Length: 413
Ligand SMILES: Cc1ncc(COP(=O)(O)O)c(C=O)c1O
Image (tube, rainbow, N blue to C red; front, side, top):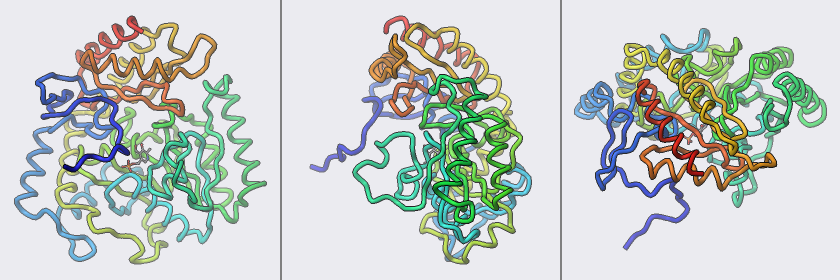
């Protein structure tokens, strides 16, 4: 009999039968309030009727019209539709399947466009699990250990993680920008640096929002040295943070963004967006893939964007995010060192009485939550942050329901 490889780990022992809106239903009939949203993917909720209908219609028409062989209508329509939501100036897109692939596509583009070999990433960032993306990932050695040699040409600068350093945001930002300048003087010359890759909010790294001065500092240095600024919007895009893209909180212009997750409500679809001028510097034919821009996934993405807009999900993410963050802060007990987030990305960091990361308590909290009917995940280098990422359709009552369960979890710890 075949078995699943033990390499695959699961946060819960649940087997899902079906999903609907913010709820997952297990094969034993139990209902769970899903505040994981498939790691920030099912933003329109599970099986949104309009997404289901669009996908079903497309399946009956054509499933796979391979995009380096022929073009298909959903991909052309999605390309045009993205123009309504992408940041100004990013008017050219390339599609792939996973977030990691989008990161690789962005990496290939920045190297080809600049002719420079190196990139700078920011400590605590998560960009994926393929070799290049894992090399660029510094949110935990678990994503790259046992996998060396990794890719050359990746340098790591600090992210302004004020809480971890025990500094103010201002101090952490001064430090991060100063160290970036030092890195550009001592490790990778600007003339050899193609791009900065950064998440607007560290996701896997612990739900840590960046700040305006930091990102503007990156922009200023990028402009000064001809370096490209890539925002990894894979987790923060499509309304998740209460703006359509996470970087839009920080008054900063990206050269490239990577997109995935919330783009297609659960169908595997990712991509990069850049200006036509920059995209034209990619070597023709150097990007592609068998499944990229799948017709059903593109149809689902079109429906997803319609739902996000017509149901006001970006504003809902902002409002429900404020409710969730305030509620999680109010409920924080002595076991909690910090509660932070942006929009519907809310993290509760568990620490010991001496302020050390408390992995065991976070794991217990996550387990107790699912036993009580609330699905949550952990994140952070020490897996000591419990994160809440509900679908963007979440209601005020569902946030209250989750917070009530969370209170009883914290009481029981
Ligand atoms: C910010 C960010 N970048 C990249 C990725 C990698 O995406 P994937 O798992 O689809 O390869 C993720 C996945 O969690 C992510 O959150």
